[in-house]
Length: 116
Image (cartoon, rainbow, N blue to C red):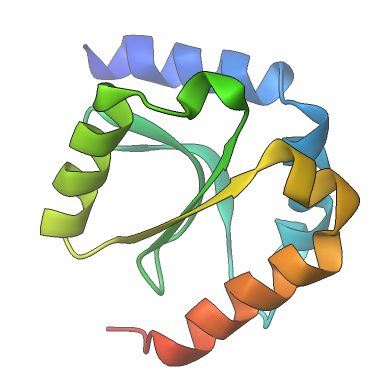
């Protein structure tokens, strides 16, 4: 897909974020988590990820039921891993019902993944 199309798609995804994505973004924006910069609906290669911290090469995906067994997700995750990114996933329900545990998991992942 052309970069211009991906940029427009990412912008659209930001405008149509799920409740779980919006909640997580409120905790990530403005470097609120450990002073790290997160981007949402960011383009990496030919993919768009929900959240990424480029400094730590950490991708965070927030999934609903439609992602339970998608082959495209597995292929994308392999592609990202080959480029040094760690991908962690959370279900929408987990973000909405227990944001503190989700944030703690992200923080722990950042703590054990030194920035390059």
